[in-house]
Length: 458
Image (cartoon, rainbow, N blue to C red; front, side, top):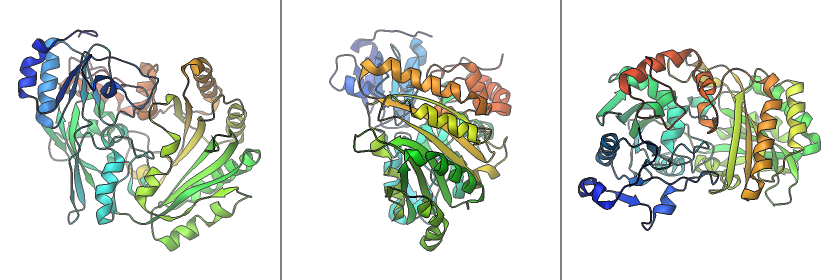
C-alpha cells in the first residue's frame, strides 16, 4: 500500500460526483485547517482529505482508497495523542462533520455518529438527565475513546465507555457496512470494544444511558510540599471508595501561569448529592488545601472542568502504564521527577480504576484490564517547538524511572506514536492472539493499519 501519493481533481472526479461531504486537496481552502489535529506536535499532509457527512461517504472513500492503494487515516475527534488520525500522502477519512445524535429517553439509549465529541454527546443526553461514561476532556471524540476503552468519570458506577456500547455500524476494509452487536457479527462487536480502530470505521455508535445529574465534582489542590501526604492519603482512601466516586491524583501547575507546582485530588461522585457530600467529605477536609472547587454541579460541567489544561494545538507527548501498586517508592519517584518538569503545562496523573469496570471478565471484551488499581500517565505539554527536545526527554526519563513500579498492561488510548509492537501486545494481553485471528477474518490485508496496529494472523 502506498505511503505517499499525489492526487489531482481529475483523479477524484468520480468520487466527487457521488460525495455528499467535502473533498480537499493540498492548496484548497480549508485543507490546512482540516489536516490539523489536537496535538500540535503532529504535522502531516494527506494527499486527500475526505470530510464525510454520512456512512455512504465513508464507504465511497474507503473503496476509493482501496482501488488506488492509498493508506487511510481515520479522524473522529482528532484527539489521539499519537496522531494516528492524519497521514502523509494518503487519504484522511475525516468524520468530524458527522454530528448526528438521536436520544431515546424512554429506552435509555442514544445513537451518535462517529464525528461527535463528548461535549456534543453530553449536551444532547443531559437534556433528559441522562449520560454514559465518556472521557475526562470534553473535546475528545466519542468513537476513538470508546473503541480503545473509555476511562472516564462514570466508570466506577457505570463501567467504561465500551461497556455501555450496544451496537456500532462499521464500514469494513472491504467497503461493506456491518452492524456489530451482541446479536449481529458478535465476534466483530467483541473486537470493536477495545481494538476497534483495527477493524473498521465506526460511522454510528449506540450507547446505553443512565440517569446522571446533578453530580458532585471538582478539584482540591495543596502546596506541592504536602504532595507526599496527599498522595498517601489518596492511596489509602481509594480501596474503600464506593462505585459512585472517581478519584484521580495529580501533580500539576497552577492555572495562573505562575508555574507554581501543586498536588491535587480530582473527584466526581455520580449519585445523590447528600451521598456525594458524605463520600467526598474526607477528600475536602484532608490537610490544608489552598483551593477547593468540589461542589454540586452538572455532569456536562464536570466533563469540561479540565478542558482548559489541554488546549488544542499545544505540543503533546504522553507516556502511560498501569501500576502494580502505588507504593511509597513510586510516589517518591513521581515527586522527584515532577520537580524537574520543564513546562508549566505538564503534569503527572494517576487514575484510580475500580467498581463496575472491574466486574467485567477479562475476555468479555477486547479490553482486558479489569483489575482494580491505578493507571499512571505522564502528560508532557508545551507550546514552543524549540523546547521539543527537553520536554520529550523529560517525559521519557520520567516514564523510564517509573518502570520498577509499572505493571505489564498498557492502555491503548495513551500509547504514543513511537511505541512498538510489544506495547500493543501489552495493551491486549491475553486477548491479543484472538484479535489477530479476527483481524485476519475482517481485514486480512491490514488495510486499517494506521493505528496501534494488530497484524493479522498468518
